Image (tube, rainbow, N blue to C red):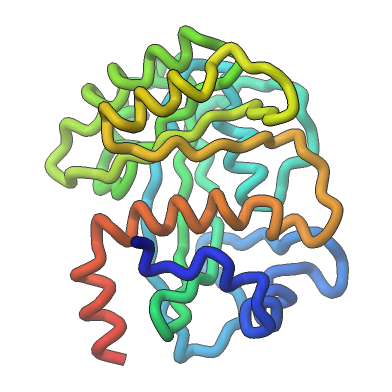
Length: 235
């Protein structure tokens, strides 16, 4: 059972905080620099996690981060050069307390890893989670996931495993079907998070990715629940 209230953002209390994440009254989410954070009450504890995005080129790693950050503006593919770091602040309700989760997404490309020897070690250093990304339109990218999970998680930090499937369209057939996803989840004990970065927003776009962000935070909570419980008990 999840300690995180997955529907809390839609409550009156959750919606009362949403405006802190937007630029004035627009539907555009605020971009936060290295030293910035939402103007929430200082009594709300902040927990930071570093997440390394891995997967084949072109599966949509950068688009996923853009969708989760509320900064996705174009679906035109451009390979990431070097390392792109994106901060995503997300409020969650754990039991009876609000916690601000700061997700630091580290995104790079296969070519950058091959070209610059320091990039892979920098991305894996003190990482909290490896996020393996595949496309529902590309069977080979899905078949790569177990290999990526095995090779990338061999670090002293023992990062959590997050798996995201992009280009998921429930109203049409996909190359990867439900039976394959269930078999994978049962074998690897990892819940596949499905997302369609191209989906347009009808209301505040935070609600379009709230399930995915809550699911990511829940995986990280399960890894560090003892630490977070102590943090919450101290405040």
